[in-house]
Length: 233
Image 1 (cartoon, rainbow, N blue to C red):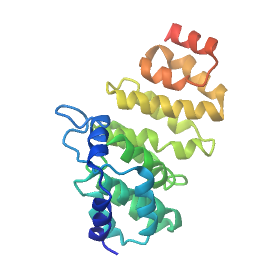
Image 2: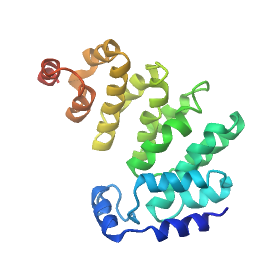
Image 3: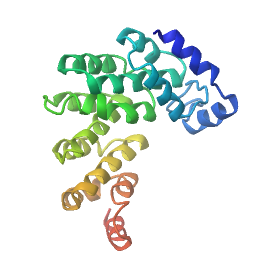
Image 4: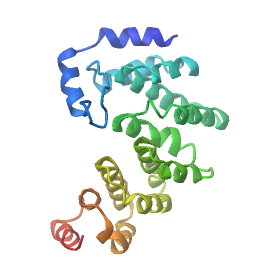
């Protein structure tokens, strides 16, 4: 099993017409957040299928995929790591997480972050010191900050909300829409588990929340409740 073999399979499935559409969707133009990224035009299910067949790929070969110029190669490699980490022991999980973090320069779009960090970072830190997330949130690096907040999805699933709220509060002043959306998304996920906890956070922070964050956070509220919070936000 080699990275080159997987890349060859991905290249054979390339769809240039779809690639052009996807490139626009992920904002790869000059001055946009994914400027210069290159797409083959594969669907995520196609990439997941290939990743499943190569889930025993050695970690070094997977890292080669993660560093590839093609977006789909990077995502497929990252999905391989999400599959491997589920069966790894603690040492193996820590190694994959460290490789992941060492390669953050290549985890450079919101789909690459969102599909992978809850499993690779969040679940690895479930019973570990979580100060790493706060270090990531403080960095002047968009994708590190998104990793920090989206990784808490793993904690939310276990009814643990403290880190989500603390990181959300840290990131409320952020100026980028992708952070506004990520914070709102995580707050909404908290609300699915514990509406009262979300409303308590909103009570304290609604006036400081970007409008996008607030809209995402209250998306599942009834219309009257949404209107109330949008009126005071």
